[in-house]
Image (cartoon, one colour):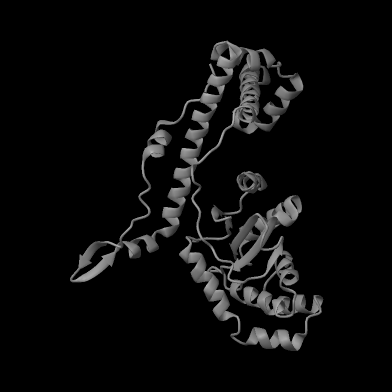
Length: 334
């Protein structure tokens, strides 16, 4: 039989209503007459609540995909006039191919450190079993994908979304009508943000004008140079070179004043205007606005991305962006 067993916790959560949204701003405690409201509590733990809601959705989606797969396989077996076990044999078991010695050796070499010095011949049967299981999973997944095309399947489970404004910030990629809007909260002194920007470059290259990317500032308090770097990028933006300067900041070896000035010279900015802007408090309010907006939507570290309102926290790998973006593109085309 096909091994699609939904986690009990996921099934429980599938039926459980969300507790993160309440209709009324009720009083939760009083201290010598001072009232503590639900809104105050939820604001304090908003990042954790958002993470919980995202985790809840992922559990629910996983359980729902299991139920969908079970129903598709049941329908296909009935359509062929065979049992589900016979369907498994026809579409999976009979198509399994033995792993080659080269494939087994590659797995062995890649996992030597975790094998505790075990000899190749000793672990070879386990590696063969692992590769066979991996191949079977792929065949089952491919079958379910094909069956979804044969039997009209529609998912109505709502994705948790957070309303995030671009605050009129500079955008790259597609225009306002792009089907995918990515808003990032980032910090120029954050090493993980630098890694994430490399990933975003790949995302923009892959999807082109289907993506509209907006960068908002979230300089962390323990990064002493991040705020001035953010202000410098905005000053460059006053001269139409925000993205050029921002890209240069990510690649810069440092963010000292001398290096900020050197980048301005390299981009041939009007230094008098740039220096005057950076010496003033012109863009302080804008940076503070981004910080407040980030905190409001649950950002408590950088980088944080909102893909059509769906939160991705941290320096996510390319495949995580691709999975989410492809889901959004598919839903927008329905």
